[in-house]
Figure 1 (cartoon, helix red, strand yellow):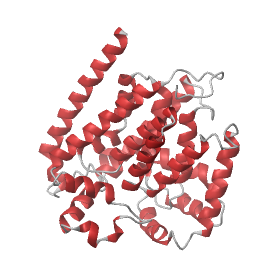
Figure 2 (figure 1 turned 90 degrees about the vertical axis):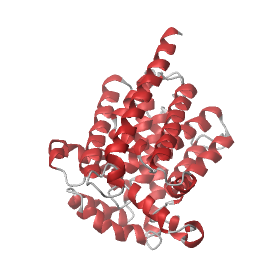
Figure 3 (figure 1 turned 180 degrees about the vertical axis):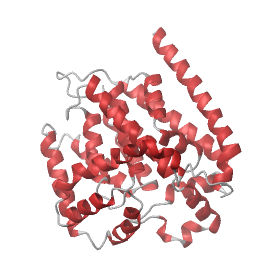
Figure 4 (figure 1 turned 135 degrees about the vertical axis):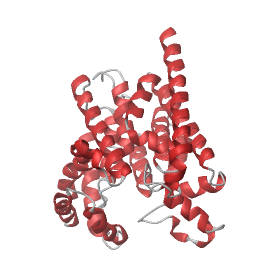
Length: 354
């Protein structure tokens, strides 16, 4: 009990320290970056969200494209309008959401909150997401509630997860539904996880092949994205492969490239052009690789782990995109952090979220 109290206190102290660091960064560097007075782009799309929120007083009524296959701005725009686009209020909101997510995951799964917090903060995407408006912080809360709705068998938790998905990315809704269906007592494949993953990948492969016209906006924007990525030659080949209906074969390499591809640029981060893409995402990729290595060294990863299963289903859905966007896989890092903070998986126990 004493250890838990000390961990809780240390977690609070760490959060307070990070909060004041982020406030200081925002005040002296962040706001100028968001308003284009310096070139330290520590964010992904924050500037775009602020610009859209400022362009119209009634954007929800006038711009139906805030939710589309190619992009979803609904969540960030709602938050900005509710907070009057105040940079400091957005930061406070992000910290409240983040802190609540850490508390919820730690309490639901009885994890060491300090250990979980430290691992999550090692990923620089977390710090970047705390400072300005973004989707990653909403995705973090989404992960917390997907864990919660499974652990508690809460339908309300599932519905709230769907609500968060609508605010961020449509792929999250598919992910939530798949996880919910998998854990349903009506699922005949509940105890056949490998078969479930195989059939999921097969279904995604066929769906992508049959929906090329619907996904045209995303595929068109791929060409620009690929030009920005050093490994675009391999990436192009994988896109061509999945376009023939063989995403199930392209998936492992695409997922690995998204997760770890940028980590090999770590020695070139000092010679960066775009701070977020070349520094933040490179270090985030290295953090993911390091965490996975620690998992294999100190844990026993298995498909019987719900955290492992969730990360694979998530990867299967988000690696489908032809756009090279490693930051979309931030929730995978959170699932791995959850797994790493749990006791070594016991094969006599069917649930790792206990």
